[in-house]
Amino acid sequence: MHSPCDFQLDPRLEQDSHFFQNWPLCQLRLMDDQQYPWFVLIPRRAGLRELVDLSEQDAVQYQLESRQLSLWMRQQFQPVKLNIAALGNIVPQLHIHHIARFTDDKAWPAPIWGCVPMLPYTEQQLQQKLFHWQQSLPVWPEAL
Image 1 (cartoon, rainbow, N blue to C red):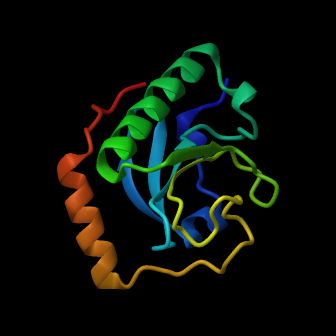
Image 2: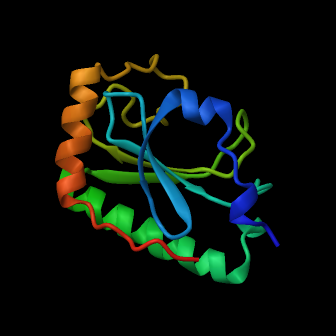
């Protein structure tokens, strides 16, 4: 069984994203790219590489959290498409991208990876976005 006590965030995820909230299973982070509304859910369990590595209980909880994030993103951003992916080719720690896509975004219709360099948020943009989104995103009680 993978323990939350042993969870450590991969340094590359920490470098490329900003903490947003802890949900019962996952840490929710905002990717540092202002070109797309782009979040990642990272299950707070050590040693996970694939979704199938989640326990049955955690797999159900992940689905609930992914669905909640997806519903919020659809309401908040009204995208043409939500891209949800767990690639892990560079960072093997299980993390699942949730990206709101639009026909006028820089990468459309291709995947965003490798299309254009990331454009980090300024500190002011980051604080404004996080504050604004905190007001509308449901907060989960700490559990599990």
